[in-house]
Image (cartoon, one colour):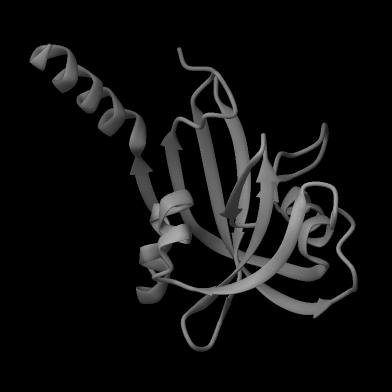
Length: 153
């Protein structure tokens, strides 16, 4: 039985095929991510998403539907990750984000085909065609790569 780290994230889109991301420092490395995080005790996924987006970006949002659910591995946690990404509509922005300057360097709109975005959130390539409810099993792909490498050794 897998023990998962559950992460929620938001796909906040705007015309021109752009998505809102946070540029952050993580263990000395700069990366961009969809805004999000983990739920607190007794907090629903949607409540956690609203809180995390507000803290990281300063935007008040309304989550709508699930964009994707992805199983995979993240170098931040030893257990597999289950990421649930919601499409969200931005209502208004409150300045500045609570976490600006801690780990968050900036909040930016980036193109859906931005290579930095696709490295950190490969599922973002589906936002352009507005796929809903996509399920991505990255754990199987990772396991196949590991198995293939071990056979070649």
